[in-house]
Length: 313
Length: 313
Image (tube, rainbow over all chains, first blue to last red; front, side, top):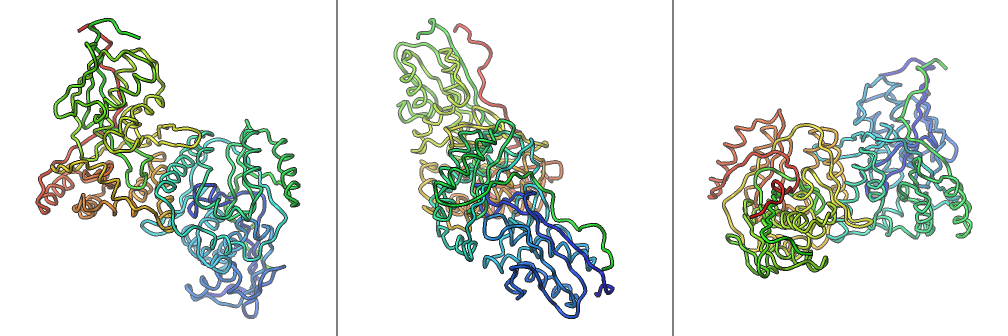
């Protein structure tokens, strides 16, 4: 399949926050704080360009996802993928997933493939191998589908949107730190096995999280945003976390958890939450730990979308 | 506190099915297939009577729960607890929990204590120590609250009812077997630790189960009623399970899981399910394994209740 010369497609995909405490590798939520944009244009040969992005497609989530899609559908490689990173990298905000999601969305439109959401997720998650070494589906599912997304594996990979009851805002505390290959490092910190007691407690927490979001019960959400399996194993990446969590909960945050593999911290807020003291408290805690950082407000985002209709360049 | 002579209170509590596949020690559903009845009457000294029930209150779930309640509230021990077992014992139907639930419900009424549901659950779960050696809260929560119940532990033990969307019937395949101290034995079969991969898969499954019941999505319920942690460790207690599950799913059961610690098997059905072939298939599979057994239809049950108002004997 070959597009007409000069055709250009741009897709945008939101950042996302995975895990939410107890939903390790299964849950993520798309947030409108940052977006990655991918533009696909016809070009003589395959090329990837973008600021601070590896130009080797195998080392690039958007590139790896694109190559797999191109190979599987026997598509032309005569195209350029332009990456505009809006999602900051290595901070637990699903940056690599957003690029992969936007790339697959843009290619689906460019080649008029008509892929289903689950097919797009399958390709985008392959892109994640370039970043973390494993094809985890949580962030890409949220970036593609939007909203709160549950990934199940029985009977094939499937992403299901979880309807959220109630109106939540999110605060994301983002430290200005860079950890090289953070996602890969964070995965290596994971415990190889989990005690039966922790297992059972986690089962109850994630059930509580889902029930809480679906029924609009803040107590259940709060109980669900706890984890003593994954978060403790990575605490060295976010030493300010416990203090920040206590502070935010004292100011009636609904729940607080590490965003993805960290080091950003996600705080769920509703109309009972005292947002201003949390923002002040977050800055104070970053300062106490000698870290500069910012705090961003966000809402739940829709999924990846193509900007306008395809137009000639 | 002392009741007037001759006062008699009878409470009834339904059987329940815990775990539902992925909800180990956190989820249970009350079913109207069987009930235990507990009658409390004034009496000279403390006494427990009932067919096939240990008369030593410390070895009896109803008795142990009753003694703890009596001690904590400094109540009179001059009473007789009469147990009518309707729930068959040792078959994974929450028999011990139903007795403890009915006992606490009856005592709450007898002494007019006005206990909250969570308080009743806390006492009833102590009764479970007599049966299994550990105070697990899942069955007693369902027997007391009714419906599908999630138990969370963060911020104190709390049972939350999960609203079920859709109309489900249940088939319970019950083999005629007796395993002495089955619950205790089943707990000893549990793996001491769980791999990270199984952990993550289980997290996704239980999230799927909750989302499925709350949204009325049979595919999510089916994906959630799977377990490769607890059920495989106990498979020797129910060797017919995998064959029965395949047969029921082929006949469009929504989902199939071991009921509690087994050996009964719970099948969730909706209007797509071919019930008659499942009933025939279940009998055939029991016969193939040389086991006699029955299959019972049930609906979701309400919780423990006091029969009528307290009346004079």
